[in-house]
Length: 461
Image 1: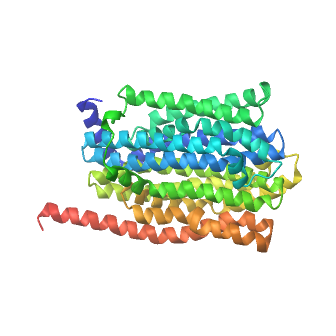
Image 2: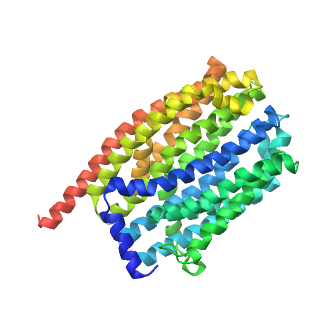
């Protein structure tokens, strides 16, 4: 990217009306998130045709996918938020150094995870909640997920870099191409080739490899604002500490999502394979709806971080308000769809299993009722993270599926039975919303203080 292009991009990020800019960046990120959710759901849909135990296996291995995503998103968002503020402050070389360091850091971590997963696969599947009937399907599925772990992780990193630069459209191309390929390959590998659950994992790994190649090409061909170069990797430990510190809210959000998924599987397993399958299906559908908010929030993040780096605090405040309001409207619409069409949505996966239907429909409706609250929670969490407020962002990120959910899923089922499994997530969402309100007010005060301080400096007072 030459100097003229850099200046044009800077003006776009700092002068385009905030609603228009967020909308422009959010549309491709929403599409990316929805496509990712669709192909995750497609795995569940096609594998579920093999039986209830096979459907449960996808829920078991989803915990591994969450860990891989946690590494990629933690480093991608941590380094991405830093480089976005560096680009906003016109420190382009520092931004390239941050991007390169994060990329190779993620490569090392993902290779370690892949090695551990392949060597200890059977024990890990049992630890994650696989019953004896689910175990063979889970092992077959997990094998290829671990093999594809490095390219999956690095794809998440590069996609977040492009979003952080304000070039979400490029990220969308890479992610959606791989996602659509996954949907096409699933039935071919599972049924036509007869690979079963392993075929779904093969399709996922291959599609992620395609996404990785497309995304990497953007950095190698100069389509991005930053470069990825081994020569630019930082030798300072402080660089990696800062990346992890800023990415910590994502690590807590994604990492605890994995632990929460494991806890949920273990709790549901005591009620049989049907409960594991039902909660897995309901969770995937709910996550598909929530992914729209995540995509919208990720369109908001580069606007917040870039303008925060440029000291345009008024634009940051406007971005926060717009995202919170619009996100709440989006999630209200998504919740209505899930509540009204819960029966056919669950039935699309396992209509022939009455127990799965009964548990799944109830779980989906209960989760959907609280979806509108995630608009404010997500905006506050991502706003804090984008502006470098690591501690409050981390605490809020820990709340939904850590501080609140894990104790609830451990306690409620023993007192309420399967209902305790079903209500743990919505109850956790409500408690998290209450906490988010306090963080939101504090965040607005911080921005007001920054804006007032800048005004005083300009007037010489």
